[in-house]
Length: 490
Image 1 (cartoon, rainbow, N blue to C red):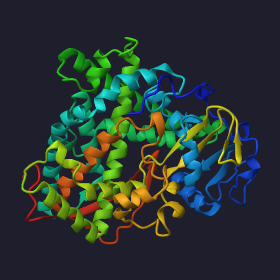
Image 2 (cartoon, one colour):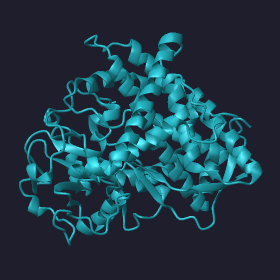
Image 3 (cartoon, rainbow, N blue to C red):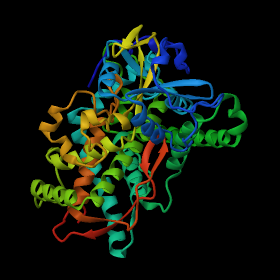
Image 4 (cartoon, one colour):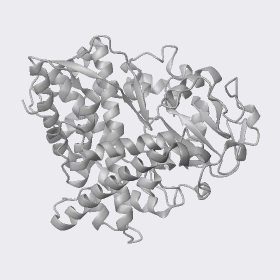
């Protein structure tokens, strides 16, 4: 776990949106799309619901650094391997809270994901909570992960017996919400007992979609165009807050967390300063973990299941590994999960093609020059477009658009440049829960592969929904119970 002795730089003291003209003195060196329109900027050929996918398509045409203009504001995107490695240098660059993430601050405030670098609660919360993702802590979460997985398997068994297709994104969302809620906060949302998503999920999706929409509406027109959406977002935010307040109040009343994340938030002081998290910051951290701790993992699982169903040879190889490594054991132990190396490659390759957190922004700590070509003033920022970085043919080959888990075989990984695979961000402020997410996802894939053959719906073509995170849209799979499959809950 990366540690810092102070917040990740002072560049973040300049908060709020800063158009690229303010930070890039030689902006003319950076290409932009042709047919730029007065006032509107680079809007031709783009859709407000798919800004990430549109930007990835632009990246392939414009090169490893490019810019887009929208409603009088200039944005710089980076995806080339060399430039990304430069931006990953923690001595020169820090996390930038970009516009999409900043739009979540009314909900998450100075939580770990949305805090500005200069806000002290980031370092305080990071140091208090990092031990909650240690190897020992992860081993303690494993039985609870298995318990939630049993609910998923029982639900999918019903679908298999009925011969009906299962709703993959919907069920993965139920699974990952229950997993982070139970392991981190001792709370059961009862997701698998509901026909519709829990209201927390509906409110969460609403806030993410609203934050995404705010990116595509001019500030001057937002009060007019988003009046109704603002009211809905306020109601969604209130529901998120009240739900979390109930979870925290129940813990304070009943206890019983056994050292989970909520216990750490409520009871553990900073080891050096003795400082504790405030009640308001605890609320923001719980919201951050409940949202970020399940939204991206559910997307990663959904994409992986899609690709497994679409590639029978990969599916068979992954199933063979699970059968061989786990053997006849009813439920795998914690140590057995990491032994599914090919299953993990499937997950990594899915995250390569569709990083569910599709980008991260970096800002200059001091005046510097990016890649020896592009001068940047202190506080200037760029968005690293992970979906394009992960398709860079110079790093991944001319077949970079194809699904191939063997890209993550050890020799292939060693042969690639550093910093070309970034599904969890980079540096001191990379995702604190990445090992939690990877263990959970590998465990669940192993259990599903051992139990079922996965069959795609005829004619389904992948369509990706964007709500700050990425998720397959309308993905349903049919299941056949494997005769050799046992799995948890058999």
